[in-house]
Image (cartoon, rainbow, N blue to C red; front, side, top):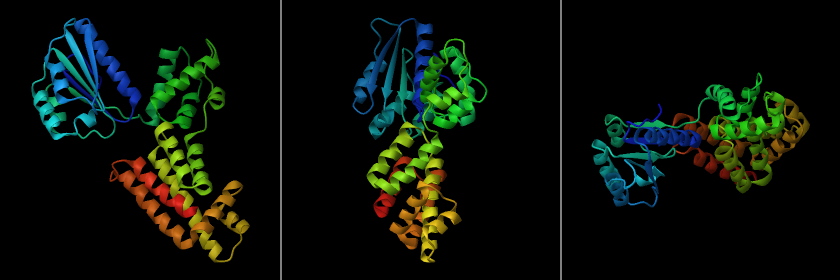
Length: 328
């Protein structure tokens, strides 16, 4: 769904900032086309008062026929009961001379307000990252339309494999790759390999070594980089942590049986730096400690996948602190 000029209230919710920006641009363009010039007022939902918002919504523009009132951090604004009730009353009969655009992150709580918005011909649009498949399709169209470049076979797949379906970051990388390719030349897989950083899988593996070598503080920094900057999927983060503890537990059990590091590495099929790190974690935790943390990591992973965790990043942060403190 895309917003249009007939909508008096539009709510954009979700993690994907690029989609929120694109929908906002579409709404402003549609209103401008229908009404001519549009007066735009922007507020931060964490600090604006209800009176300020209602005054702008209900007053007429001095220079334009229509007004666009934008509230960022809308989840904060709607968090107070009196504001939510007032906005529910407004949504039941919105002003026709104004359009309200509310932009919220992942913590938007749907309820009666959303239903009233949709009943009054408004829209509540979820702005979530697309699937990898959809992001790959988007790459080709975006590269050609916005950056005047074509993608060679396999280039879009490799790009999404490396950085995930974050459209804002993909667009940035496409601009860089188009410049590197040169006018009229396609963006090849080789260029993606050369100019785009580590894959999500490679970055996630890095969390294991940081946990063992540097402890909780550094691991929190790495986790934040993976989740909030690189857009690594929760499922991959959970799997990485579970995998580390599974290997540490298996290694600790083998140590209890008197086996040396080389024999342990051979049985677990871990080599190079991973061998030393896993054995180090196994010694620090012991078989009982590794078993307890493995069970906790499995439960945490299950909570993030089942929806019982309202903020998976915070849930993983708590687990990473526990693991990092015990290993160190």
